[in-house]
Length: 307
Image (cartoon, rainbow, N blue to C red; front, side, top):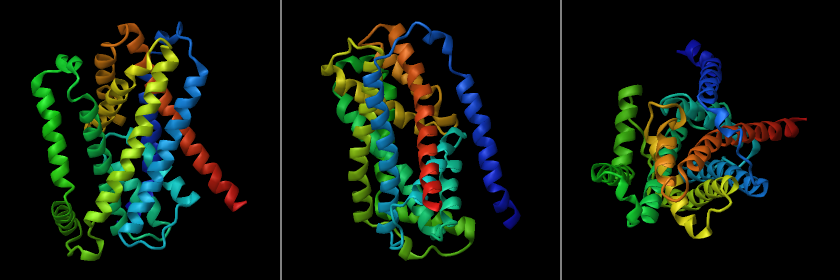
């Protein structure tokens, strides 16, 4: 087992490089030759996207402290762990992202049990907040009549299921069962998530979701300056729904195809289809660049601190 753990970083980075290359190769860059960007909107979108990522690392810190890890601080080292684990989303499945945080953060002396609970809780909160946020913005919009009723019911059922799973008694029971199956031990109640912990994480992710969805609006505005501000709510809802669906699509690296399909279908309702298509391509490429920039900045911060 120890030998496998020693190989984990090499396997993580190898898979990450492979799937990042495959991800970027899937982008049709030829379709972008005639697109000109408004760089002010593009810069604003990038600032919002990076703030969203740093905010995610802060929420993770808050969850860990709320779970009893009192020695945790919002530090450069923890941000770096979060940044490189965040890149694990490009590897199919949620395991690399979650296991990456547990493995790399445990090297900082943090409890693996608390890391497991906080990581599972963080992933669940991201999905449920985004689903609730998207449904709140788009639920009564008549333009969404193009979506089949069956798919709308699926979104609603998924949202309800996530709410049930994140209820403290259910969440803690599932964590205990998983721990018993994997470790053959009883999961200590000191690692249980309370209503206060989950509620705090939920409220913090609401702000994070606003940041993330605003960044998509300004990317769309950078590509299509004619996009009016009265469409902001709709575009934010589209971006959030696409992001939540991509997280649920664990079979696809970073939700590739799922996110773009939803964005293209819904953005085409308020702009020419060719413009919507360009935005989906640019958003995918820009998102990869933001993730790599986040990683680079986090790495640079830890390097400066040690020199």
